[in-house]
Every structure is written in structure tokens, then in C-alpha cells.
Amino acid sequence: MKFLCSILFLGLAAAAPLEAFAPLPNEVKIVGISAIGSGCPVGHAFATVDSTGTIFDVAFDQYVVETGPNTSASDARKNCRVSLNIEFPQGLQFSVVDTTFSGYASLASGQTGTCRAAYSFSGGGGSVAAQKTIRGPVDTNYEMNEKVDLITWSPCGDYTAILNVNSEVRITPTSSTSRGLMTVDSFDGRLHVQFAAYWRSC
Image 1 (spheres, rainbow, N blue to C red):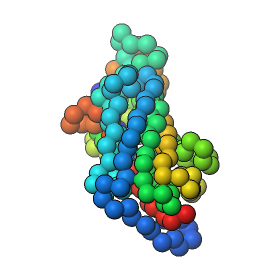
Image 2: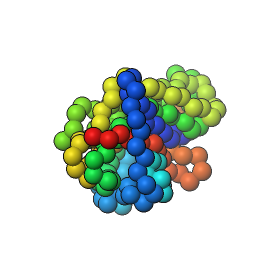
Image 3: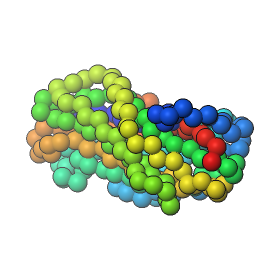
Image 4: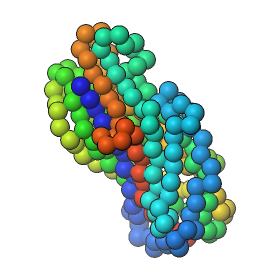
């Protein structure tokens, strides 16, 4: 049984009208990445930014959650905290507020697969979280969108920001007999966290 989960973060405008400022290509760079957690051993989290500076991608290749025979309770829940040091033109700030969970789920009756993601800026305001759940029995591809009401912007006045992305994947309940497996990304075994940034002038 499998539950594959990818997470897409989309930046949206705040409730009040705002003018968007898109950085020029190659003006946004990830200059550092650190990762810690049971779902991302050292050397197994990767980050890239596209040429427009608006799409970020974080991938993991050992994010596996399972329950069933010969597993422990800790195998049914994994987490990872990734910190991205992002460099961009001074005078801009960005926010990420919309999350889409998509993937493939194969869960037995009574099993629940959950993806949770939260992000915050070091030195900034509070955090924004989104969570989605899919219940067994199920064997299908899915896509679920979660909008959040709170807008959190990167700190203003600098040319760098540290974005912290906290993710968790779990299966409940744990079982010694009913097999359940959550891997991430159906094609290459990686969990992808993608977010498109909405930019504005400070």
C-alpha cells in the first residue's frame, strides 16, 4: 500500500490589491540549504530555483513512511525541516500562502495518510501551515488544494531571507498487521515541495 505526496506552494496576493514585482531572471538564487529530520538524512535534500525566480523546488530522496509487519511506530511518521537561504534584489519581499498536495495513495480501510507543511521566515512574522488528509480504502491519484488566510512576508530591507519549510508525512493508525507505505513522488521516489513566490516592493 502506498501514499505518494508532493506539495506545491503558490504565492497569492493579499486581500488588499498589491502590485506584483517580478525579479529579473537569475536575480533570485538559493545560496544555502540545510536540512534536519527523520525524513531527510544529511545529503538527501536538494533545492533549485527556476530562471524566473518565482518557482522554488525542494526534493527529498529518502522520505519513506510505512506501517505493518516488522515496522515500529516511528516508521509511520517522518518529518523534515529545510532552511533555504534565498538571495534576491534589495527592496523586495515575498510571501507563499497557497498549498496544493498531489500524488498517489493506496491505503487500506481504516488507514489515513496525512501531508502537512508549514513555512516561516527567520526574523519575520509567524508561520503559515496547511494540512490535508486522505482516508482509505483508496487506490488513486489525487490533488487537494488548501488556502490559508494569513499572509506572512519575508523581512524587508535586506537582500536575503531564510525560508524555513517544515513538512511531515504520516500514516495512522500504526499497525503490526495491516501494511501501509507512504513514499513520495511517483516517478523518482522524491518528495517535491514547490512554491511560486508572490513578490512586492517594500
